[in-house]
Image (cartoon, rainbow, N blue to C red; front, side, top):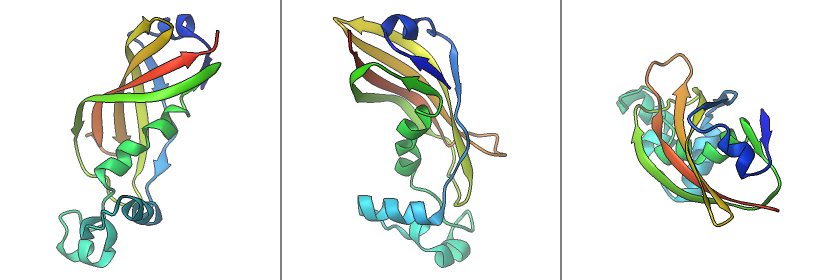
Length: 153
């Protein structure tokens, strides 16, 4: 992990891979809590018995949006953005889900700084993201996320 304290430090990484997070295990408990939080209780996520017999993966799978919601957590395991007044999730671009994440899989985030601009003192950073699944060739998803950073002077 490394620190970024201002636009100038961030800009030095333009076009470069910033790193890869540690692995995070997706448990059934996490899937169930996400189902409760989002009111999405589809059996493929919440019913291990039915998913084991009727599901295409023979186990439950994480919600696609659960995997997506891990970006902020895993991003902060790669880069420590400091000296902030505020950080805003601004957008998601070109997101594609590649394959399902089966319960108890381990995932990690790989990131690259694809674009950065200074909008009158606000840093707009576009980060290429790939959520890799341990021992799988295809990613869970790939896309770009956009953050706005309001650095302190």
